[in-house]
Image (tube, rainbow, N blue to C red):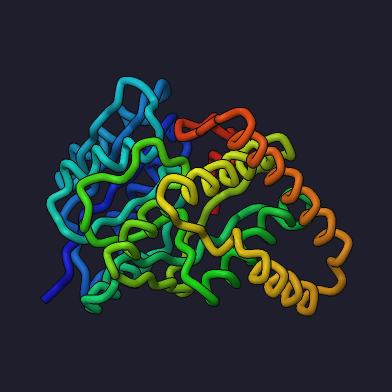
Length: 295
């Protein structure tokens, strides 16, 4: 018997990528899995995102669109998706990424294991490593991969059991909030590195800092409000994977050191935002250079 899932896509002004994403989802190679529905939640989009989704839904009745009049954060959009989703295995994906053709099959078929609470694949950025920011983006996702092999860390696109009616709407790190809830339910996480999700990181230092600052703030909020610490906050793990990276790519030692210093700076800003400014960026400012993903 196939495992059926509902997919939620979350968008704000994603006209450059939303059609490519919907085509990627409706053309997935499936054998043990079926996609019952694809629900797009568009949060206050002012470009052609909504029109593109509506046009696509005319030819694909499994696709539907829900809109939010104002941006309330991705976690709020996920809650709207969960309210309408019909299946017990849910997949959430941002509107600015593209999964490989077998990614849904890989992350959803894993739920044949009744102890599994959430699964995720490997995000692979399309950024060119020749520039420093491109190198830093690729480095972060390589480190994410190394961490996830030690202890599952899910991101960009995840599947999970619907063991909750909602997630905290003021979480700026929705995937980590889902991780926390399923683990508190006594379920396990699984990282599936063969399940590729193509994404695009920032292309300039301002957007890089904006994104990493917000994520650090969100992880501190998660520890304080949901009593859950992601593995990327563990210093011993960070030292271990940085040593591995340096051993494998010693020629990049200088760029590695500079990228680490930049990350430390971003984390310091995010920490300042959380503890001093009392800021919670759950409806975050868009890093525009992460859009228009090309493959």
